[in-house]
Image (cartoon, rainbow, N blue to C red; front, side):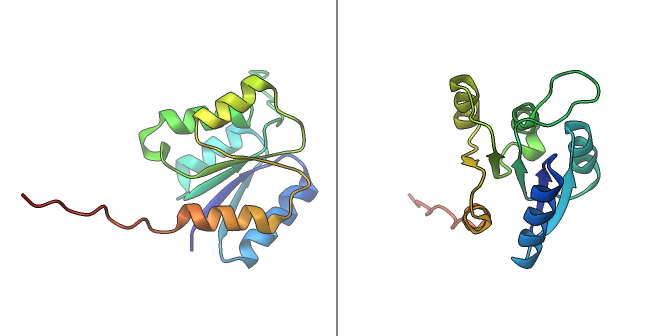
Length: 135
């Protein structure tokens, strides 16, 4: 079963999203802060991530879901992991640019969870091998 890391600080959204993902055949790990997410990434296998943008940062470093996305894309083991942004707050033009450049589509709450699940399923489908060209 593919594993999804859910970074979400709203308990109701987190519980519902994790439940829906589990019912759809995913294993879920959840985090409330970037530090929690980094700890999970360091100890668990993760195939995809769902990131809320505005999450608490107890260390006061103002890290967000976009900060974690940047870290993932700079880490070879996670550079190609499918990611999506799931947020209730409109993103600034700069934040939208970051998400687009880092290959993470943005979904706004409320969004049917089925849309997120369909997106993850498409992203996690095995890709066919490119054709071989023999000389």
